[in-house]
Length: 432
Ligand code: SDX
Image (tube, rainbow, N blue to C red; front, side, top):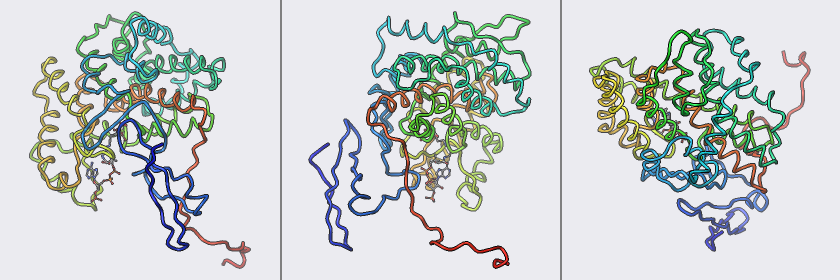
């Protein structure tokens, strides 16, 4: 708490209240409004939580104006350049970069938990062949709570640790099972001698009838994408995990609620929507007409992959992914990828257009990621699943931080009621 306060004057009663101000280590201060309802009988009103800090956290910091993203204080650019996804997952969950023995132990635990129960695997046969992979993943993650009764005491730190290992280890296997179900191919079991991303590629693309060779650049590009998507403060899906977890629901149910929230095109589903948008635009010549639709409010057309609730500058992740796009496509001999050319031109035109400049709309993490996934052969319906694999690390970190907080309360927002005042029931004969 600081000694700074805001003074509130209730003009109707003349009553003044001092609201305490709290400061974080960096970033905006917060106004503690907990007395407002008790002393003044009012709530704050902030649809979409545009100006509301829902919790205190030590995990990720974003400066939207400066385009800064820190995971436990480490700049995303440095982690993208020097770290690995599993090391970043350890960092997000435990708060510090691991020593070599800690990282080795963490990797060993993840590698030893990659298989899923055969009954869980058989569930995939129950999904229709054209089920969206996100539907399969969210259902399967929730179903995990039917299998791990031995370690779901959320107040037991060891159970929380086992849950973290299990979900981070198994989410790629679940994703691969969904992919194989959708593609009609047989499921490929995880291989514990492979790296996290090598194993993911092997489960996606290997078939029983011939050996599969993992492309090192593909594994490197995937690992970078997982790092960049691992966490992002109190975004919609992370806030959903926190709200679901605050009721004391088991951690698999909480993570499954995050998967469902991520699916929306305004959030993690945007990467899939960007590819659809680029394919609809088709050629560079169609960009002016498309942007005219975007600027026409009645069209309800948005430039997907652009804009962000927090970033009013370049999303630092978008810059890194754009550079990786060039590298992956060039090394895969697809440097002239028409979708990338179209995306680059679309970005260039939009960033010089007053509509986007005045609204501070810049490319976000989803604008280029789908182009890399496509170059790696990942189908569009799996793009948001890839996002979910990465964000599972962040969801686990936030769930752990919340559950370990002795002051945790169930999340229960209030409302501004504008419905009918009290009225008496009318028999139907009187209603006609
Ligand atoms: C992610 O929160 C996170 O951190 C999310 C995320 C993470 O890592 O977890 O970063 C991942 O979800 C990235 C965002 C992916 N979504 C998209 O790319 C979908 C397209 N973008 C938008 O729908 C929108 O920009 C949001 C949802 C991302 C942000 O919406 P806001 O903050 O509620 O902003 P808004 O809708 O109030 O827009 C402000 C203005 C409006 O115009 P006016 O009413 O002022 O005239 O900007 C316009 C909007 O119409 N606008 C857009 C636009 N985004 C905002 N116009 C055209 N195209 C867009 N993409």
